[in-house]
Length: 367
Ligand SMILES: Nc1ncnc2c1ncn2[C@@H]1O[C@H](COP(=O)(O)OP(=O)(O)O)[C@@H](O)[C@H]1O
Ligand SMILES: [Mg+2]
Image 1 (cartoon, rainbow, N blue to C red):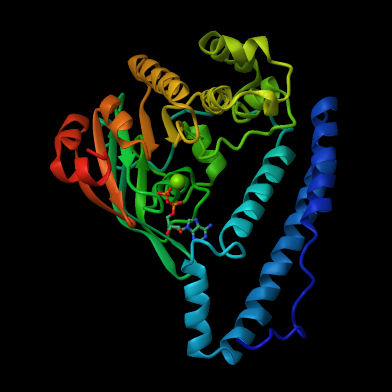
Image 2 (cartoon, protein in one colour):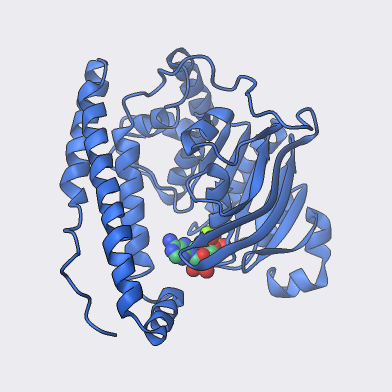
C-alpha cells in the first residue's frame, strides 16, 4: 500500500488532556452543585473540535483515499479490518472508544440525579400496540462497522416480565445488538419499538430515561471512583430525591457493596465488580435490563452467584435481555431464547426447547 499523503491530514485531537480537563471541570461542578456553565462551555468546545476533525476527514482524507487507493488497497484494508488479531484495527480502536466513552461518562457526572420527573412518563412517538405484551420489538435491525454489516436484519421481541437469552459464538453480534438497543451503536436499518414507542431515533441517554439500562460487556466500571460513586453514576438520569432510596435498595441486594462503599471499584473481586455493574444498571430503574456477558471471566462459583442474582431479579418481575456465551446457564433461566450467528437469528424457542435442540447441544452447549 502506498504511504499516506500528509498534506491534508489534520493533527489528531489530543483526547487525553481534553478529557482530563473536562473531567476536572465536571467534578468541580458536581462538588459545588452550581450551574455547570464551565462544563457546558468545555463540552461545546471539545465537540466543536471533534466535529471539525470529522469534517476534515470527510472533506479531505476520504476523497484523497478514494483517489489514490487501488482496488487491491481496499481489499487489503478489508482484510486487515476483518482480521481479529490485528491490534491496530480492533483492540486499539476499541480501547480508544472505551476511553472516550468513559471520559464522556465522567464529564457527565454533573447532572447526577437532577433531572425533572418526566423520566419514565408516557412519551410522544407512541405507535400502535402500546398496550401490547411486548415491551421490546426489534424489527429487521441492521448495524455496520464501516463497510461491514455486523447485524443483518435482527427480529427479537421481549414480553414484559420475560427473561430472554441471546446466545451465540464470539463475534456473532450479541454486543453490537445490545449497543444498538441502547443507542450507542448506530442502526442502519430497521426499527426498535419500546413500550409502544418507536425509539429508533432517540439518543442513548433518552433511552436510559425510558428505562433501557445496560450492564456492558467487560463491566466498564470507573475503577478509580468509589463503589458508591459508580452506583450514583448509574442514576444520572433519575430525579435526585429518588437516588438515596435506590442506593439503599441496591445495597440491600448486594450487602458487600455497602460494606465497601467508599473503596475504589478497582479493589473489588471479579464477581463483586459484576454485582456493581448490575447494581449500577439497576440505579437507572430499568424497565428493561440488558446484561452483556455477566458471567464472562468469572470462576465457576462466582458464575453461579451471578446467575443466582439474575434469577432473583427475574423472580422480582424484572424484564431481562441476557446475552451470554455460557449458553446452557443462560437458556436454563430464560423463558425464551434466540440463537445469533454472524449477525442473523438462526433459531428461537423456549429456553427448554433450545437446550433440547440437537443442533444447539452440539454447537453451543458442548454436549
Ligand atoms: N469496534 C468494532 N469495529 C469493527 N468491527 C467490530 C467492532 N466491534 C465488533 N466488530 C465486529 O462485529 C461483529 C460482531 O461483534 P460483537 O457484537 O462484538 O459480537 P459478540 O458480542 O457476539 O461477540 C464481529 O465480526 C466483530 O469483529
Ligand atoms: Mg460480546
